[in-house]
Length: 48
Image (cartoon, rainbow, N blue to C red; front, side):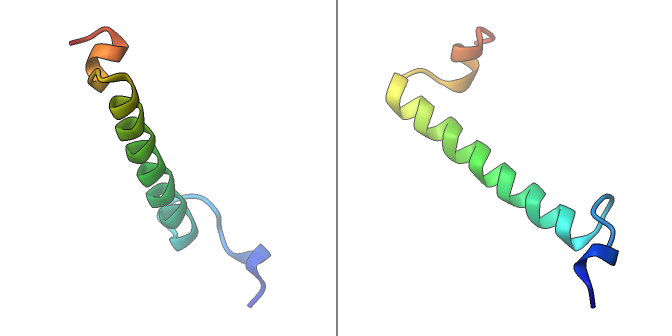
């Protein structure tokens, strides 16, 4: 099956895989920033 014919948006496997990857990257970047600065994420944003 040709990948060009599969939909790229909505609740399809392609979109869900990328959503998971980007969420994991966001968590990793947030934790790394927290470790490097010594401040929580909310404090960095000015909320906490």
